[in-house]
Length: 293
Length: 280
Image (cartoon, rainbow over all chains, first blue to last red; front, side):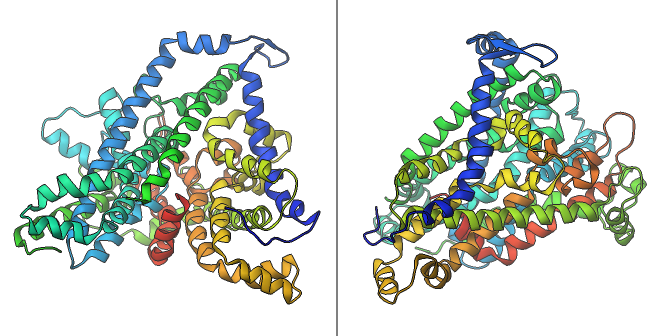
């Protein structure tokens, strides 16, 4: 889509674009180019010189059990966050779409966690489940359950998944609710007249019509779990215990800022970029289908 | 509502109440902990009735000074500055660039547009080390500019404005030109007032985005007096041998949550619009 009527000016458009282009070039393209360049090079331990290493950095990564393990961890973590979050939000959205009285209040009370920073969400859940003082950890202990996210990998994973889902439910809920409200009333009514009960209507009409929203949210949740949960991991587990919650983004950070291995960190950055590009392309491919039924 | 089903209504309400309760539980525990002394919190399990030390704890963290309590007042200021600078900066630069892309024809126009577009695919998480190096070379570590500038470019906001400008009727431009208005006059007197709702919606989303930034401030700030509160709270959780004073941590968490939560709840209408629009 283009404008028919435009202004004629030679320098003004460049002036208007200058701030955005300058920031984009300096803080996006230059670093991304650097990451690509470094990913093909090997630095000496003092960072004084570097030499061309071809695909060695990538080969190293894909032959390291650590990195492949982190890939598996990330996929498992993302699947748990995305599916768990979507299931809970869909349930809440369907219920909120049903009720007439108090719908606005429920909505307000469900969406505020969107405003909570991932790091703060991590702190809240860490406190609830911290082995010695956490109130839920104490109850679990009284029930005779052995709970310690600092020692047990599965417990730690459960904790970061809870915190991540808790923060994301509000976002999913809003989109599901908007999707539900845009389903034509007449379809539901027609099905009701034909004798379909609420569950049947949900299974055969509502859920299929909601699938574009669901798909869109699935991609968004994967992106969220891959990248935005860094703060949760950093606050709650720091990737531990062992490597139980060491997701890819946390690994890049560790390689670059704790391990100071620039080549490996850059190669990991490049792999992550490819993942984001893939996910974003997927999202845009289906974005039109999101609103049109 | 298609038909009357009292039982199902009851189930819906119960599910929603349960959902609201589970969502609110961490917040309630945090609030209760922030009103007790460290000893009361450490007594396992802690009491779920608010204690009597609300003012003491909040005053202690806001003032700072003790060993485990960095000055949260200062951190809140940094966070506020960051959130406002990022929100306003993003809106200003994306509006200008969207205006240029939509209302002018110039060489490499589409190239510029695509350059802005691909930044969508380069979130800060995937290019942290090299971006850090660039900011360090520019001498912007531990500075307000370093905290905000790299986060200010935004493809989503540019898109949002572009989409909106494309829906503005061409007749308005023609009328403005016939009346002798230049491009900037048109921008100021016609486009800006028309964009008010988009700006409000975007502001809410970007304010929260800026306030909640974690990774970027974590790596480029090394001085305690440049930490935003979201990063500062991480440093309050002791690792190793010292004891975490959970009552103060929770007071800080409450303070860190309050401003963005207030923005979401008070500006709910704009918030929902901004969220839905910026994903289109």
